[in-house]
Length: 509
Image 1 (cartoon, rainbow, N blue to C red):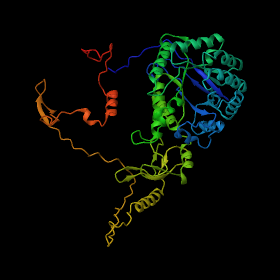
Image 2: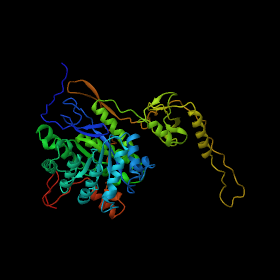
Image 3: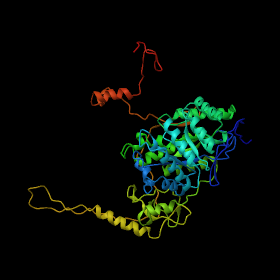
């Protein structure tokens, strides 16, 4: 008998909301089950990615996030175009950060003009986001609504303190609103009710329940988003049946872990930040996010692939990536692992870089030419071996030690022979060698199991005898400061007058 997965039928569903620009529609929501529960319901519209575009050059951003846009810094129109054309954004998220009264404090008129120019330059939907200052956003988004009249955009964040002003402008000029509430299901519902009472139609509302990054309060966001989705599906709560947007980019990249420079303990800053953004995005997807506001192209690519895999659709084509890499790398050359000639390798597997990289003992990555056939992937070029040989010759010259003299006072100087460099064999393919380090020969014992069958079990893996001396953790710490730090962070019971660990202390602390 075939196994059948037990399923539930939900009586509620999420409203499908349409964002549109020049006839290009992006639909979010519409699901009638929990995120990616394709076995219980339908996924009519997969989650979308909005790329964050600041209206000025953000000096506090990590270098990793500025690098992909170094040719358009300070140009929000060019930035938005690149996010659309090169990195294939579903939506542009224009962040009017420069209007913050505690920052540059640019005027509402300047911000409205920027929003208008960006809107005219792109062919995909636009979300215009203020500085989160309640009073300034009411002024700025009112001007933006007027400047973008006739072309539907989403205005946010709409908060309880300014919902009347922004909501009225959205009604007057037929725009959408993003209702933003501070991580609370009741406040989220209340704001939706207030907007409804104002006359904003349900098809023009998105929910922003607010979020944090992984390690910075995301569990609260996850819980609230999960409860919103549960109320919408199982309790038919019409005031919560809206798609959710997660503005995660700034929350991730302002964390100290994303901004710390490369170091041996934390690794490379780029990989660390990208991974943190991708992990945060995936967590929010599982909580119910329908729109993700993201920043770094590599994190976006990883999350897109995740969405496709979880939704049961094919991964997005690698469009224009190879051409972009060929422009960025001198001589249209990039470094990837050695491959048989002619074989193609997906870019999400290949490690693109500007120089060869050591991958193991006596192995480095070979140089290959980037394919420009528009099919995605990378092809090993016929001249790869020639280029790689030149690199090896250069490295060989580097390892020749210089002639040095003996200690001062010795009359006769002896010359040391240059260390011979063994000939290098260039491989057409490479595989990681087996790990033969560590031969663990444990003792084994033969015993009978409960049925009387002879079985072989792992024996003692420790040496017999008693310790020569008592181990004391204090002896391993250098000074009082280290001891205090250990006590603060060590895994031990902490007691107070009322609260105890798994055991109750006889003498109160």
